[in-house]
Image (cartoon, rainbow, N blue to C red; front, side):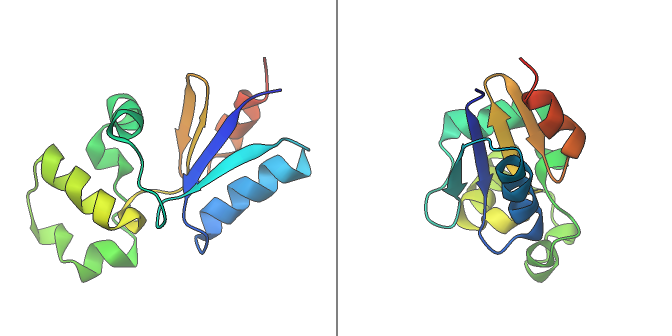
Amino acid sequence: MPNIQIFGVKDSPSTRAAQRFFKERGIQFQFVDLKQKPMSPAEIKRFVDRFGIASLIDTAEKAYVEEGLQYLKLTDAEWLARIERNPRLLRLPLVRSGNRISMGHDDQAWKEMLVP
């Protein structure tokens, strides 16, 4: 049985969709609420290395616009600090199963995580 971790926030529709996806298939998962516990630097680095920091940022999210980030040029370190303070800036959920990872609502990637 795969070891699934879902990083997100409770009130995110995409995070709830990921939880529902795995529950419907009888797959247990660990949910990490990023409002309660930020991702470790090593964990976020895994996603940054795969997708790039720019891809992880959800530019359609209300928090992105409210903070005026569309007008700023930030370094990766500054982005990471912002993400730690406000996980809603991420394209949630971030899902990990071993070396397989996905971001955002991605049914296909989640299905692939279930294949040994």
